[in-house]
View 1 (cartoon, rainbow, N blue to C red):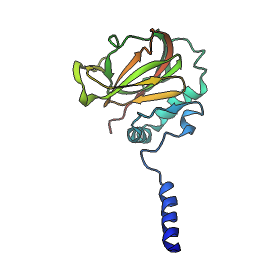
View 2: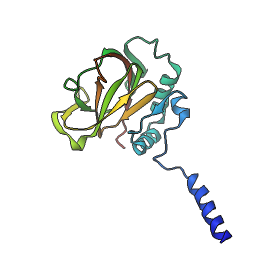
View 3: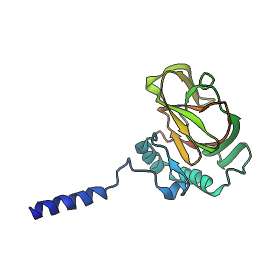
View 4: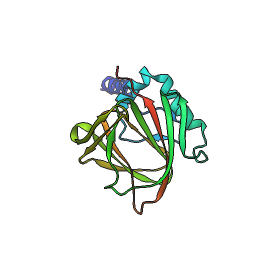
Length: 189
């Protein structure tokens, strides 16, 4: 009996130490004050990170090393057209004014710097296309249903091409919020 317990105990510790592609995004990348949202496709992140490690490291380095609260609204070049950021300061929108969107050329990283908003998340395959993909804008729009999550400072979202998102939705009262969206070039294999 003791051997059986010892075997299962050893097996448990071995399995507990196994790192899978769906593991959490390491704090070494994001910085101590940032946390990935539960909706992030960690398997897709792992794949993209392995293919474009330099781009992801630059994006997370920008987040860790910039005083985001002091940066004014505008576009920030991080790595030419491979990685760049937009900081916006706008009032949040009513749900009717916010559109579902997706992108093919870039992964979106959304992080609220100050304030709060709701962000809708849905798989593009579950939505109806209202504006077909426009390569000049790297944008498609949709209608349909998804799940909404509160976006607050400290938690970031990642949206890959299969992830439709509906950002900037008010949590009540169309309050202002400041956020950063980092565009990271997507590797299609």
